[in-house]
Each structure stands twice: as structure tokens, then as C-alpha cells.
Length: 158
Image (cartoon, rainbow, N blue to C red; front, side, top):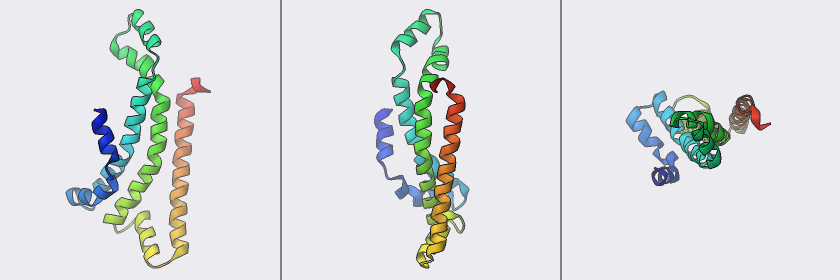
């Protein structure tokens, strides 16, 4: 599936926003699909990289002790890939925020994206700056939350 994922990742997803709105309407689902489409690819690509870096010797050792494929995945491969998964999630935060803003620019009457668009159209720089700062604070907060969660779940990495 790697060629398909790379090809879809290279597709300008933001250009698909009007299609998502036409297919799913102006409601929340078009925005959810837009954000999910932007976030999923860094997570998939990093997860694959994490699974590929799992030590072959460690997998062979666990198999020698009688582990079945599900146990190998849960006990060796997944813990090995978790740092990469969290890296993909952190990369996805910025892309997700971009997706929210773009989705609101195309098909919304409310939200931060709409606020920024209206402020830019009216040359209302304080309101525009407030919207941008609010997005930056949301990005920093979510990145900090993922870093905290990563520290709690991956305690062996300290």
C-alpha cells in the first residue's frame, strides 16, 4: 500500500475541501473528513517507519520463546513503533489545525477560520492577530498534551 499512501499524501488535500463540502454538506462531517485526511498520512507513514525499525533479533527471540504473531506485534513491534506514532501525531497537529481553518474558510459561518477570513477582508488586524494567536495557542497546547502523554506511555525512553 506504500505507493498509494505516498501518492495520496502528495495530493493537495486542501484543494479537495470544496469536494468534501459538496459531498457531505456544510455541517461538521465535511470538516472532520478534511482534518482526518490531513492528519492520517503523517501517522501512517511514521507508523510504517516505526514498524520497519523493530529489531529483527528481538522478534526472532520472542518467536523462539513461543510467541504467536499477535503477541509479537503487541509485545515487540507496537512498543517499538510508539515513538514514531507519537511523532506522526505531533506532525498531524499542525496539519489538522490547517485543515480546520481551511474547512471553515470554504464552508462555515462560524469558527476561527471564518473569523480570520472576515478580519482579513475587513483589514481588522487586531481580530486577525487574535485568531492566529488562538490557533498558535491551540497548537502549542495540543503538542504539549501529546508530549505529556508520550512521557507517560513511553516511560522506558527517559
